View 1 (spheres, rainbow, N blue to C red):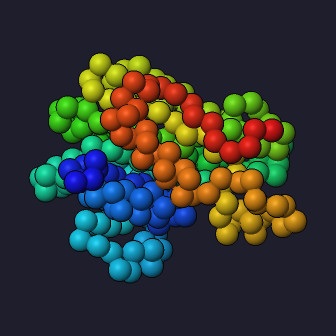
View 2: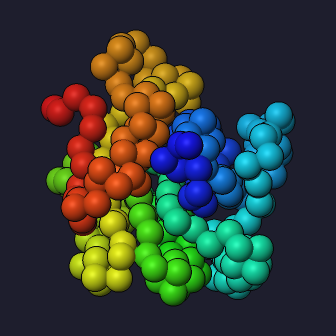
View 3: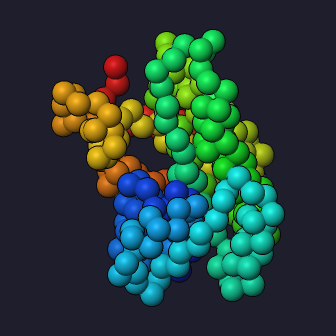
Length: 235
C-alpha cells in the first residue's frame, strides 16, 4: 500500500505545469487528488484521461463564497484535505516600482496572495477539525530580497512566505506541517519562451518540485515546520 493511499490532496493551479506534475506524482503514489483551476478548458485538456482517483473543479480562488461552498461540498463527500498544495500564482517583471501598472500590481497580489488566503480560509477549519494536515505554498528565491524591476512580484511572493510562516506558528500545535518552497526558475515552456537564449539545463523541473512537495507532505517531514525551502541554482 502506498504511503499516500488514504490521503486526499488538493492541488490549486491544477492545470498549470507544476500543478499537473504534483497531481500526477500524488496519483502515482495512490492519493486521491482534487485539482482546482479557474481555466476550465486547460483543466479538461490537462486531465483528458483522468483516473478514478482524480476529480477536477473549476473555481475562482479569489472568490471566498465559491471557496467556502466547494470546501463544504467536499467535506460532505468525505474529501477533507489531508494535504493542501497551494500552487496558484503569477509572474510578471520588467518595470521599476514607480512605473508598474496598477493592474499588474493588483493581479500579482490577487493570484499570488489572495488565492492562498481565500483557499486556506475555506479549507483550514475543516482540516483542523479533522486533526490537521500538510500545507505547501510556493514562494520565490527572488523574493528573499527586493530586486530591480521585480518589486511587485517580490512583494507578493514575500507576502506568501510570511503568511506561510504565520500559519505554521499558529497551527503547529494542531497537527499541521506548513512549509514554503522557493523555486528559482522552473523549466516550463512558458519560461523557455520568455527567456530565449538562456540555457535551462540548471533550472528545476516541475517533477523535481513535485517530488519535494511529496516529501514535505510525508511522515518523514513531520518535524519540518515553517521552513522556506530553496531549490534551484543559487545566484
